[in-house]
Length: 292
View 1 (cartoon, rainbow, N blue to C red):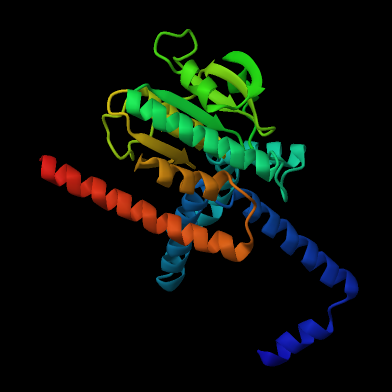
View 2: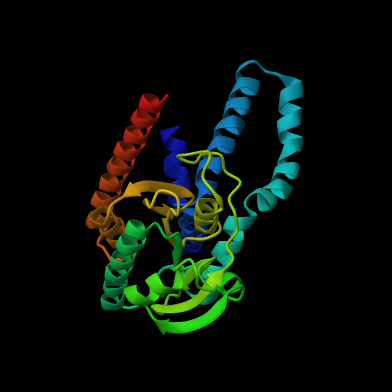
């Protein structure tokens, strides 16, 4: 075995090495594009099933199962683009905009100011129990949702956000979208609703389902204020972090939308956010048990 490996290494030419490097880079780029999406979990599950079936068919020499696996590869090649259509579309959009390896977000100072304005507005809206949806664009395009609302193209201020979501205004029923230039692009925009059942509360209304839905179709963040309870939540990648006060909202927004982080800081932030998410979910579960 060692002799075969040595023979293969000695027979490699510069073109072979370049060929292997290009293929490796291609596979790495594909995994980089899908990193952080729901497709990773789905692909992992499919891979485990296929590997498990291949192992069983090989160990027990099951001819029928082996035939099915070999002939099923063609169907799998056709099924993958259908199953991962949203992720493939997002990856092609990022590639077309040139944001695969970099972000085209607003400058850090502008994003920091936006976070402060959103926190100030959310606090007032929560106290008054005025429902609100505030979407923060990152890399994925939101033009199709911006077009459904009223064009604003204005500076983001807490007073303007509070005024828009006043119940008696014409623009309160919908979402405010802040584009990646740091401008308030539209108000009263219509967002897609999620079909997921993995929500902190299955009885959540349309506003919360829209907040989760817009975070599923892209990488946008969404701050939602409940009209019934006044509680603040934020959605990201199809997940909702509920029951946030102003301080926690600022912390989460700073982590996902704030200044660019180093790799080490990003890792620490992810661990901290995961721990915070688990604590929130545990607290929610305890409250549900007490209410029952």
